[in-house]
Length: 81
Picture 1 (tube, rainbow, N blue to C red):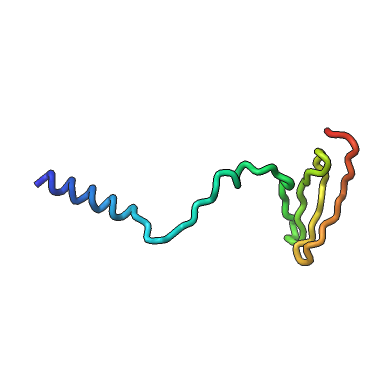
Picture 2: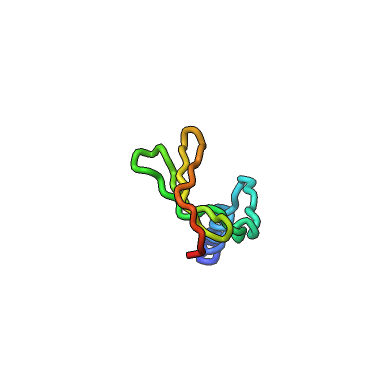
């Protein structure tokens, strides 16, 4: 009797873990691409986004208006920090 209960729990666990959804796998290479933008911050009013963007091997600060998609470069570094 105990074996049947254990077998039932095991089969139910395996059946419950099966997913009926067909999910796509994200390629590992997508996680290791060279980044060009990093350190995102949303403004307190939620209207703009600031981030650092890699330009000529230097990170410059940009601000993007989320409504229009226009971005403005705020810093123009001449040396790598």
